[in-house]
Amino acid sequence: MDARLRAIQADITTLVVDAIVNAANSSLLGGGGVDGAIHRAAGPDLLDECRQLGGCPTGEARITRGYRLAAKHVIHTVGPVWRGGSGGEAPQLRACYQNSLALAVGHDVETIAFPCISTGIYGYPLDAAADIAVTTTRAFLSGNDSGIREVTFCCFSAGDLGVYRDLLEQRAG
Image 1 (spheres, one colour):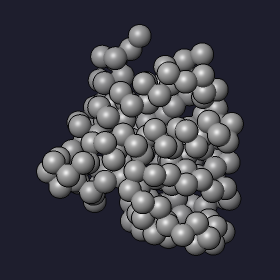
Image 2 (tube, rainbow, N blue to C red):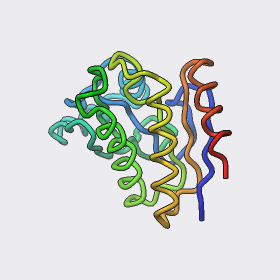
Image 3 (spheres, rainbow, N blue to C red):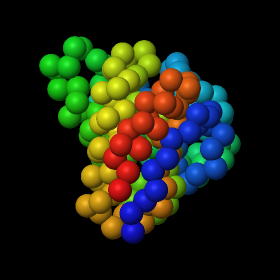
């Protein structure tokens, strides 16, 4: 069964889904942007569990409980820092989505929400990052009887939302 993909503008920490994805830094110990917001909303127990994980390399993903979040799980993935596009950023960003989705499948996640990974302080151009997010997610779901029913791309701004909605409409069906 193919999952439904949608894009919304919202605070990812408030979403009622099985898992939200955290655009984390490699320490997994919190930071700015989405990462800081998720850690603040989940509470100190999330930080305690993350300390036990020993970090996470770029492109990989780790899973924790959601604690005070509405989501049961947080999947932490470390996106690449944009260095002009010739430093392997695209394969690393694709790996973020693939590894997050694989972890979701392994934990019986049916609904998952992604932020715009690497497009904040890491500087990845939004159009390119959104294209990778949508194409990688579609490819994963079409080649995988995953059990994932819905993937939400949760955008912080109206501009980000417009980019994702355009991509989803272009690639529908």
